[in-house]
Image 1 (cartoon, rainbow, N blue to C red):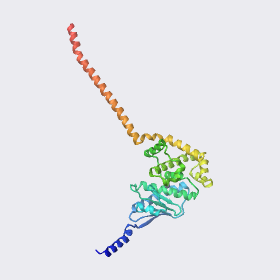
Image 2 (cartoon, rainbow, N blue to C red):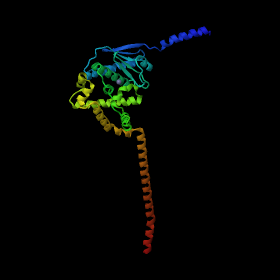
Image 3 (cartoon, protein in one colour):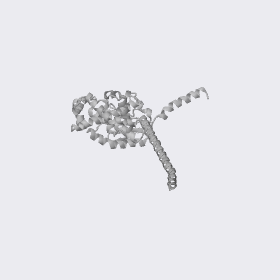
Image 4 (tube, rainbow, N blue to C red):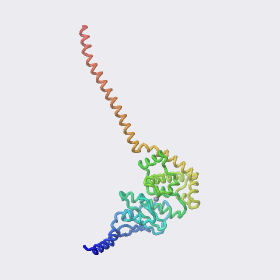
Amino acid sequence: MSHRIQIILWMVFALLLPVSLRTEMVEIRHENFVIMYDANDERSAKFLWKTLQKVNPSLQEFFHLKLQQRIVIYWPARQMDFQNIIPTHLPDWVQGLYLPQQKKIVLRRTVGMNQSDDLSQVLTHELSHLYLHQLLGDIPIPTWFNEGLAEYLSGKKINISEGVILANAIFSGRWIELEVIDSLYSFSHPHAQLAYIESYTAVRFLEKYIQIKGLNWTNFFDIIRAFGFEKALTEVSGMDGIDFEIKWYRDLKEKYQWFIIFNWENIIWITLVLILIGAMYAVRYRNRKILLEWDKEEMMEEEPQNVYHLSDKN
Ligand SMILES: [Zn+2]
């Protein structure tokens, strides 16, 4: 093959390569939402559509808000497409992003993602960001509240492994102050995981005060709109941000520090100690049994002698 033909073939290959990698995006609609997805992935798109049908009415009710604008939900075909679409570089653990200016939610396809549960949870989480932003506009909101509320609305519950994460953070003193969660996107994956769990528990802790005061979330949002987040927090909890955080942390400690027993290292130690205690009891039981058997044998050996002596005396 001549050098010239080789160059032409390489040029054709280079031109064809992006075409072969490009995916055809199609759309499916639900009210004012447009789900854009890869034509080959109709199954996931239908699942997103069904999730939207299910969760959107609940979010409308929770926020007392009906969205009017066209919202795009973008579900790219490949993991790497996520980073190409969003305007900034984000860590690999980010599974979705709400872009307020573009009224767009971009979801990321991740390895090992459970299509049904994870996708539904991520979409609901991002929809919560969308609704909160539409409701409060550009009023500054701490990240812990925004993320914690999104986790709460997407149905989060603290499981044993998350309880262990909290307990470890409490015992090691490496728990994250709520204010620091504002720089969430600079966190490593484990650090971010802890930040989301903490945010969720802080929102649930705040909810308790809202209820004690005889109010609901709509009232809380109204106070935020009128006076800002800090004042709304003080109004419902009777504490400033610092005291709220101290009380939240104490509550967290009380509820979750005992989860430390589920820590793998502790489980191994506890199991070893239990095996040791069990082995000690087994040995003691065996020894007692042997001693009893010896006693029995001795008694049996002694009995004929007594008979002999008795008969002898006769
Ligand atoms: Zn989020």
